[in-house]
Image (cartoon, rainbow, N blue to C red; front, side, top):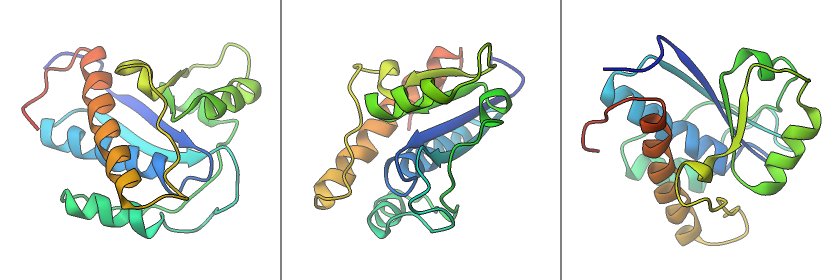
Length: 158
């Protein structure tokens, strides 16, 4: 296995109940299945749902893929920009908000999660049906694999 000794990753969406916990769960699954030295967490740019569990549709979608998610929503903190190596924004609005609050010369590489795939944003499935959550899962899986490969890891088939 190649890559850094330890990498800290923060997935970020708006409220931290749909997309970023989905990304967190998927990134942790890939990490665990490949024994990667990576720490993964998620947060939101807003505190609308701070202290709440992920949306039940996110939890259900992850469970359908053998992933359990029990983290609580939290808002991005200033310290995150120097604690994490990579901050992955789910869409352009999240990215813009993150870049506005990022301290100058911060440690974290702040990017659109989709930039590790086809460059597409992960649309918020909150107001839609289950199909939106399934699409979010598929995007997170695709971008997650590409993200880890960009760090130099060779992944097992997932």
